[in-house]
Length: 469
Image (tube, rainbow, N blue to C red):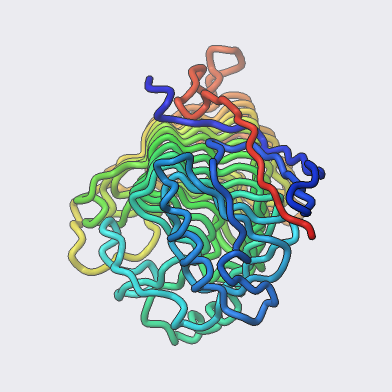
């Protein structure tokens, strides 16, 4: 393994204090964990930024990042966003670069469509996610980048999504709504210690990328806001999501890899994904969803120490005829759930198609799905497991699971069709398609003992200095 090709960071601890007086200024240094530290730093104010919440700073962000890009091969650079409310439209990042938000900094996303460039659809989707046209660029965007950090002292990015949600519900948009952060075709990406609010649509979307760490972020959206997914790794390899708190109107983490014939042709799976120490609230969706766009394949996903509160389902697998691809080698352990509609949900009859050119013979493969060491309370129904007729979901394993039922729970607790697998130590007892193997270590479901490359960590202590007159 090429250790210099990957990075890992531990949970970010911020240590801020006055460093000293230099050239008549107090320099307060804020230390943070970063994949790489930078040799050059500038403030957004150096490029005419005005943090009054009214003035557009789109030009200031673009000029700052263009100027700092000259240091890409000379120690890298860091843009400091000071306290204030910084209204801005979409802007692009550069390589070997850190965007650092002060704890009292708020990026306010512009509500003017003219501030959002229009982009071509993703090649693995063939169209916009919301519409059959293109899409608006994300607020913070980057493509073909190396070594990018978006972090801070828990500063805030507010997407001001209400106007976008209203237009979407009213059918007034011909393009897909913007996301807050999207990084494409890139490697060595870190997104940490920021708060994301009110995204127009998805919050964090790494796509066609590798070596991605999303850590210590808070995501907040009204639980009735449309498609405000938390974190969506999409056709990504070697990704880690941990220590995040998400309140969402859709899935908290949605694992994807392309849509029907476009995803099959693009052929880039999501694999080697770790999700740990996630807290999720989403009354109409899942803590972790696999699909429904999974046509490039999803494999080797490891989720552990997940807490779901007032969430429709724990781990949900969504696919349908025409998707092709696969979801396999999925490992989940140590989940705690409070107030759920379903603990387990799989379906082979989910979702729409991008167009009518999908292949009805493209049948997805769902195989080797493992759940163990799970406790749930106030549950309406234990499981809804629906495979595809003639193409059952196979090698499902559920062990050491205790489900406490709600006062008005369903009489039928396990609804199973076109699936196969085993169970052990599950209460209430599963359906006959998951026969109980009896107690014992040998009947526990699998969870890998080895570590993935993204788990090899060397935490570096970096700093951002802010000037106080």
